[in-house]
Image 1 (cartoon, helix red, strand yellow):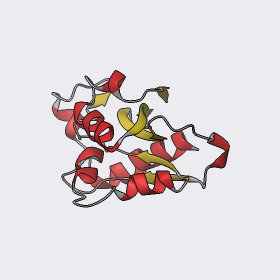
Image 2: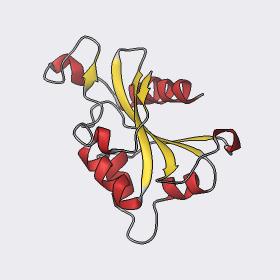
Image 3: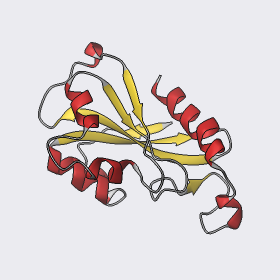
Image 4: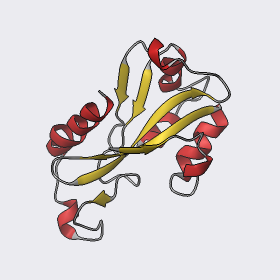
Length: 143
């Protein structure tokens, strides 16, 4: 796992949709590269809190990993809220340590240790493998 703390603009080129979304809501975040046991590299977003508000890292209510559904990624899932804040940010406001995962194959998780997303072998995975490897790698990363 590797991370660089940011308020979002540093990541604007790599994650423009998520950066715009979080900037619009006024929250700081960081991107964390999570490596799975089967060599995929996932981009997981860590919500740091409201921009300009000091955070007490010892006051967490616990960690929460939120995974998107089929045909989505972490950004699209949060974009569908029509009123108020997405529940991800409500949890952050309530003191939870919020992490937003992006499964392999989404635009934020096209990396692999040895394959390119242009390789047919890159795409040789199932939903079961996402649960066995992606979710487990994210959970281990946020512990």
